[in-house]
Length: 313
Image: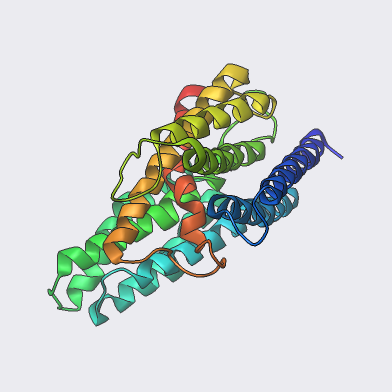
């Protein structure tokens, strides 16, 4: 067993211990609620912890399989997220070919570029070439009704569901300073700090938060965001040994990723409010779909990827 695999197993064990502790904390909070009543904040917290169990187990298995497992996992997540997004996007019969190209050509090509380590192409393929191609395909069908709105929403779907998510497995292309193959651990680090930051922000914001950031969009509070970012920084500092950042650099990167992700979730809240929906889908009972689970990851991924390359590359 090589060092990377051993570290993955040790890290997985540590995360499982942390999740057990959070589960016990949630059950303890439940026990304090008077019999016959429920606390919505505690119940939502436990739902998030339960969804985290599924996420951690799935990610751990993919990481243990190796780069192919990670790439296939995020390609599937992109497909499911794009499907959810397009459900609420404006579209017409003239867009059917464009949407088919997005799902069955552009998405696989983007992840193929990640697998082949074609860094130059994977960073411009969707923002430049797909951006130009799909409107041309729709325009050739001859339907100009609400053309700009339809095209803009399709482009948004491509950017957030395929491009941004693909930059998580694209961390595999990062050349570690020591020449090792431990770049896969950067993915584990990134997902953990963003998701745990979300978890702490949710609980702290609803228990202790007073000042809402955007009252008409989301219950997120300034106090909750501060708690989430600080929790992510602490966790990131403890996990600095699996990154090339060092302890202080890892804490700073974790705080940056968490803060960007929390702001990104506000953007998704605004989109859902505009579409008149509470959740993107009902995949996870009471907790929405893929986009509801990955909204913070989607916004944080490009920032984390580019800062990692430009500062430590």
